[in-house]
Length: 301
Image 1 (cartoon, rainbow, N blue to C red):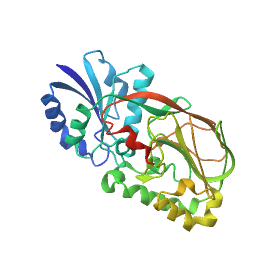
Image 2: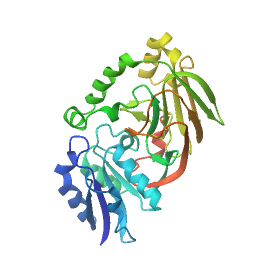
Image 3: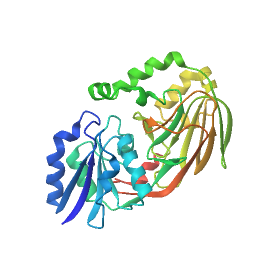
């Protein structure tokens, strides 16, 4: 009987996974898999989940939000573990899970994973840390870090918007320098996002993103967008903002350098990122993933 390492975060989202533990076990037993669980705890190192990993395991199943998946991916990459991952999106936003087409229903998600082929997909890397969905800097990027976990669990995605409204008085231009083989930018911005996925806070911002093209999608919201803010938001609603050259710089690249001397934090999938300067690159086909509904669908074009 092959084993599945099941790593779950009981604090993610609305604690959904806690009521679905039997579902996880039942569906896997139907496919003749043994579940070996590891409960994420504030009092134990996540690395302990991998102490017994050997060739008796078929794959690693992760239940949580993007931050939880990030943590697992970083350990897997640093330990040289090549077992494929399956993701049960049970966090608040679940941007990456939605990007790869994972259903919200736990049983359907498990069935999709178990009936899929392994796909090699891209992931991002900021300095020495990997990310699955988006790295960002500028306005709003520390919202998830500042939002209390209890508030997230109580009101879900609304908690992010509440925290975002609180930051409106802090709007200011931020000087940034960006260099890549494809494009360079030096000037003032409000926000910069580097996507491996497509959405942030469920907003489909990088709608041209493709998880297997070996490229990251870079979006810089320039400070002068404020002059045309209404047309910009209309374009964003219609998913046409990447072609709006008045206030947006958009390009694809596999590596870029970012420096900023402003007093701002960076964010990696809702968690605090490294300090500037940043070297962000695409780890091409760097992750073995199960459950991807259709890589081609993720072109969003």
